[in-house]
Image (cartoon, rainbow, N blue to C red; front, side, top):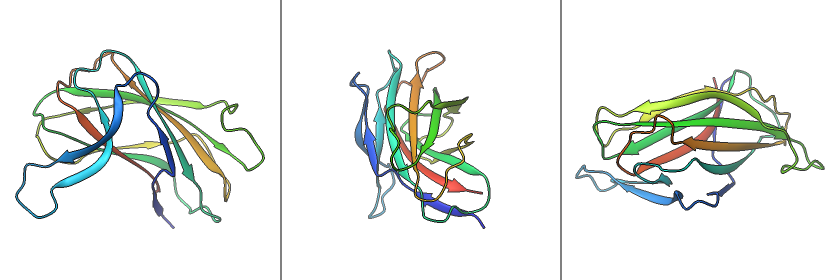
Length: 159
């Protein structure tokens, strides 16, 4: 049985100032054009990490554990790159001492402004019920060509 989404219960935007809480203002004319997420500066000049914590449910759904990223930007070109690192941590263990599993790099190439761009990354971690999933999202300058602020929305799903 698939499950989710689970949204982070905690998020910390690193120390570089390149990541910040953000409201993306869509260009449409409906009564709900805004999305809340994590903004990343235009033309990212230094690698930057967003730290996330996802509380796992008491019973873990079946399927493949994935981190789902939705990204919005007012851009018709440009690339954003990041690497996800993750580890499940049980109660009684230290989340800051856990060795995170680095996953493969992901990217989004913008071709249309004001649309949800989606990436799903299967995660190495295998959490048990009530664990905390510790995640580091490292946005990387190498190959980053997006010249607009991007807004990211992260969740955990099982598919």
